[in-house]
Image 1 (cartoon, rainbow, N blue to C red):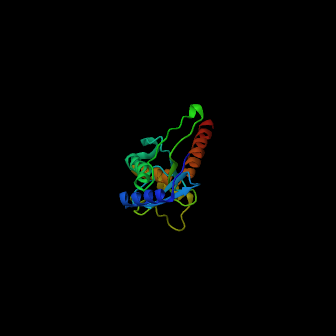
Image 2: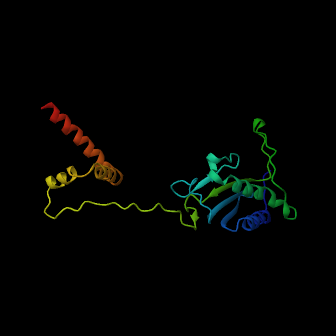
Image 3: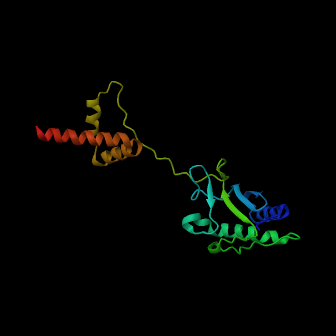
Length: 195
């Protein structure tokens, strides 16, 4: 029968804290049969595995790079501590799993889960992620009394390189406007050819 004592959970908490001083853990016992380990905060950037809410459930049976990114070794070490730390407590036992799902027989020392962040409280990375340098965009200055004709005249007088920059700027900053203009220009040219 799955069972874990409070002292065994405390030993897991202690060893995780010693092995990973850069991370803040929450280690809790659930229903005397399982342990939940939550990585709450730290200097490790888990942004590659977190969802939009800053949360990720880790499948301890499937630790691959496509599941946990570059953190495979870290999670392997965490799992090793979860499995071995309880045996270091007087009367404690190491994790085992003698279950046989084919015969509907489940016998394990205890169950455990690992999460990065919680469903209601995201993981907090204490080091700021590197931000991309801000793109400096040169805008066209038009006189206050400028008209649409003046603006189109100015676009028409641009060099090919300036026109490319102008188009790139509209596409990156205002994609909906770029799409609308493209459609209107296309229809305008078709109408002009049809006359």
